[in-house]
Image (cartoon, rainbow, N blue to C red):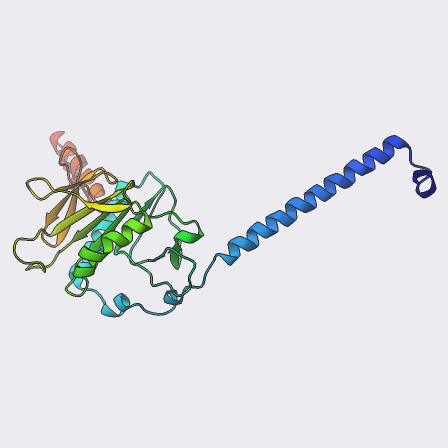
Length: 258
């Protein structure tokens, strides 16, 4: 057959041709497999109903206490993790399944370490997005019961490591001496959140943030192990400028005249 079809090809040339054809077929197989993986990934990009329609929580709005505290905490955490890959989102829809009608959970603040921030409409765990390490909820008259009694189990199922709920309102929503700040930590063996016991002053230690969480009226402060206040980037720059000014004054130089 070889001599009848291609009499001018020698045996070695036939082998080289066969190898070349094998390489081409191998590349074609890899290309096909790559296309299949890409298509499978695209199929996982579910168009979630509540990414385009308001949830019950969306329709409630938020108070000025609520908005101010979220903005402040986000600024503190952004500065704290400024040298690490870290994504911080406020009020972003989180989904656990590929069910397009799944009702999302949207934490007031979610911190996801190990990945850089990216703009996104929502966060889908079933598509491979990692769960947040830390989640914050700011209590309100409308949501506090869900935040305290339902959210811990929801965040446990999501794989959240730590969950904190804080009441910035005055007077506090929960009467009878109930704490303003509550925290839970995931017990991986049991698959459930376990309440974190505060110290005698009502402070709660966050392992994920390596910080003390400290109630302060309308604000929730973060302190390091030495009880130094965690600052926002703006506060840190102002502090640095003031320290430089003090140094100049100690040398007899008026910084305002420079």
